[in-house]
Image (cartoon, rainbow, N blue to C red; front, top):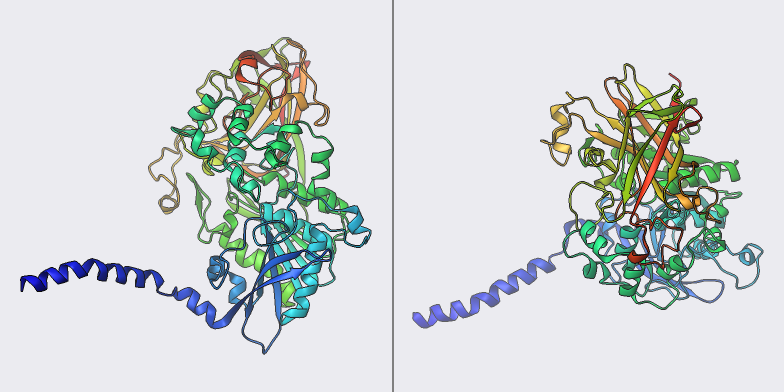
Length: 628
């Protein structure tokens, strides 16, 4: 008996392990259902120059009818390779409607042949039809040609993509293949110097880019760099690290990677100009749906500005725009009703998927339904309602200057003081953090974080209107017009447009399950409707930076990208001004020197910054106020 017990005891761990392995190998029920209706093929599609691109094709088994093709081209890998199905098919509304779904590794990435080029610009020789000349548009054209011949399709092709994949969607539109009917760049990379996730107005996105290093190149340069830097929290550890130069020493890469390109191109030179995706927006034949998130910390700039570029450069394109209260890619998340501690009501993403995106592709690819009724669909925060129209802004707006006043006031009245300014000390040993709480990574919620932590700092200026008696809706870009004097030769200017909630504000009970912290005190909450940093040396030109003359009054004018927000009665409009946003943006050395090659020892660590609010030098923020 004891011997039997011993044998069972010895065998049981192996039995348990076998059961565990069997459980792991158990087929996924959703994938099983997908396999009943779909089959997967992996092919290497030949391009005109002989290079082959890896392409995964998920095609309905039903051959009784033809199907539209919906394609995504990506530098991030079409995994899983082999027999397994991509997970996104599980929740895909297009799989439900039997689309042929195609995923392709772009040239030079993962299983595709050829050389990878970051945000590869259009090739004039390819456009002119030179034999063997290629770019992303020709690769798309050749892929579509192959797919039309080798799938059971209805002759209609669409493409889409988010972020970097959104850039490839933009390039796809430029191919103008006659079968390409609909394209949707979503949160697209558009201009990596003036906006998007590598720079903001010429200032380097220190945390975002360093964190993203392993994914910037196909060879995974910089892998492990963040682990070397972050031991406590990103604010403490990036401050201890120092500058780009110190991070560069950890990267230790000598090849032509984007990291090194950033270092060698500190200004908006020919390299950055040629890689601006807006140069490709002429005479686009397919219908285009541009999508973005109002609180997208990565590519909000790209979505707004790509829409404008297509609208002006290709007026005959059937162009659509959709914006909601989302983070980067948040529009794909069904059930989304809140973000951070902000509540937006009935799911904007459900509405977008069911009433905007799918009807767009259905009409142009299936040939079913009606043409989308609205060219523009934008969700207005504050009142938490969609607005629809034929162009953006949907309604007529008036540019109304909101002037800063002595004593921290804001009004539409021009200041009357003869001499008036407010100053602060910008201290790069203690830069203003991007969020109140310590984090080990860049959070997506910081775009809607409560800004009371910043308002309490002596190096953050706060100006605020009286309590609003009526609603005030703004729609469009916000213009910043500062009159300033600094004691050094360069400075950053971070301006935040904030909705200051009433002291008695409370969420309704139904909102509490959708916010991060239902017990968070929303009374007096300071919502950053829009905030953006500008590197002062670029105030006259991104191509030709210019130092400040110390202690001389200087204009610094720039644009905060578009907003769609309603300040409700009882709320107040607040404007905050500071000179750092760390480590989202690298610290300005407060000297007119190369920020990519300097050390902390080169910094002018402390300098005085004055913001003027007097009759002949009035600082203001110009809001696009909607006519009620």
